Amino acid sequence: GYLAEFYAHVGHEASQVRSSDRASLSRLSMEVSRLSSQVEDLSSVQLKELEARVLHETRLALEDVAACQSQLSDFRDTMARAVEKSARLEARFRGLSETSERRAAVEAQSETVALDIQREMARLRVEVAELASGTRGGITLEAEVRFKAWRAELETQIDQQGQNANRHMEELEGQIQALRQRGHELEVAAGNASLLREDVEGLCRDLAALRSESARADMEQRERLAHGERELRFELRGVQ
Image (cartoon, rainbow, N blue to C red; front, side, top):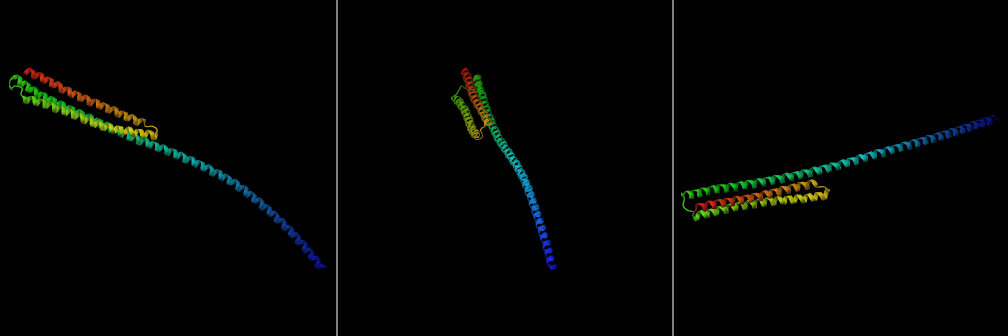
């Protein structure tokens, strides 16, 4: 009887212990589930915030890249305009220098021919004066031949000067035409070459002015030669 009561008591205690353990395990499982839910919620919020922040930073970075690309494009455009302007100024300076050199050469040649005319005129006047004073003999065939040779020589110099000037101006004209073609290519490529076109037109005006000056110098020299010849022939007729 005693052992039976003891075993019954032990069994009852064991049953209560198992019920308590099951309740503890149930509470622990619920706590774990609650904590897991909280962790998931917290992780979801943090991930969304992190994703939003990453997207924001990415958008800002893309905007910075776009701004840098725009600035780089502007810088390249500025450099291209600077290079174009430098080439344009260099071409204009070279054209003006060559035009100035050609003008100086034309003027120097004109002065040389004018001095030759003056010297020969002075020498012939001395001969005419000698004829008038009787210190020389009559007008010989040699003097006439020398007079014609002098005229032919001066005309040859004037013609050579004109040919040289025309050749130089044709070279300049070819360079200006090349610049005009380059300006057209730039205009087609960039949509704007007005400044280069203005420089080319300026060079064309300079060349036209040089042509005009050369033609005027040629005409003046020929008129001076003809005038001197008329005066000398008049004086010679007076001596005769």
